[in-house]
Amino acid sequence: MVDNNKVVLFLGRTGSGKTSLFNLMSNSKQRLGNSVSSTTKKFISKTYCQVTYIDTIGFRDTEDENEHRLKVILFLKEIRNGFDIIFYCIRMDVFTSDEANLFSEVYETVLTKKAYNNSCLLITFYNRPDIDEVNTLNSPERQRLLEECRSNPKYNAILDHFEDRIFFVDIRQEENLADYAFGSTRHIQYKTLNDMVHERKQIVYKHLEKFIEYFFPERFDCENMKTMRDLIFKNDQLEEQLNELKEIVVDLVSEKSTSTFYDLLRFMPITNMFIDVFERTRREKIEKRLNNVLKN
Image 1 (cartoon, rainbow, N blue to C red):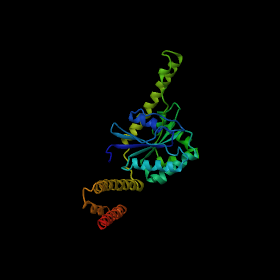
Image 2 (image 1 turned 90 degrees about the vertical axis):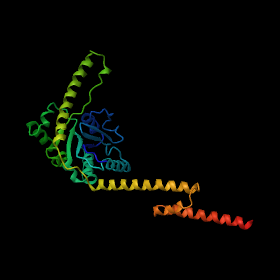
Image 3 (image 1 turned 90 degrees about the horizontal axis):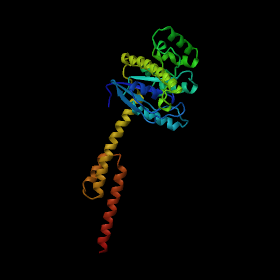
Image 4 (image 1 turned 135 degrees about the horizontal axis):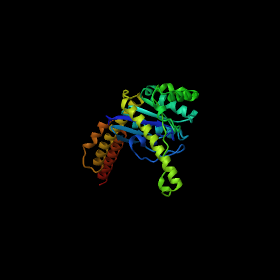
């Protein structure tokens, strides 16, 4: 079913902060993983303020190539009806060769380069104090930080694909104050830290919400997604045919109908095998009856 809301995907490697951002933007409380293992084992979607957010499973968190391909297929199945915005997440100062290879795979093989037009780069785990300034277009702080990022050849190779659609986000989590005695030194310290973390998250939310509101690319589609839609349609047709075939087989086995057998011909060539079996069985029954008559 086509979603008439604006559809936003969070993409990136395991541990890049996708689920934290999904929780922030969709007002959710999905369990979080870490940079090594993901707790997001399936796609999660939630519509909030007329925007549908989709948290995706982490790619390339395993060396098993078959498992990775399965994740790609599941991803294409989930997004087959199109989307509007990709928030592609990478960790600040941790843009490795593996990260670069995954980035290339997503934008050159899975979705194609056309998806850049729908994409926004989120550089996560940004812990410097000027988080509001670096996300303000044309601010001196932002220009300096972008120049700093471009001095890293790996960053420089991808930044131009996003033009000004780049944000620096802090996704640290608040401490659970219930773990500390009320009024204790640690309780006071973490309460102060939590207030700061919450304030920084609200700054991130403000900038991303504004971006989503004013960014209107054409809804994305590509050949891989069209192929997936076609496969699902054919699979649904086949499932419907097999269910009907099952009913016919039940009738034949219970000998409720003699003419139903020929209805199987409608399922050619899918049921050739079944027809051969039934025809052979029927002939054997006839021969057995004739032999009994002759003996008597």
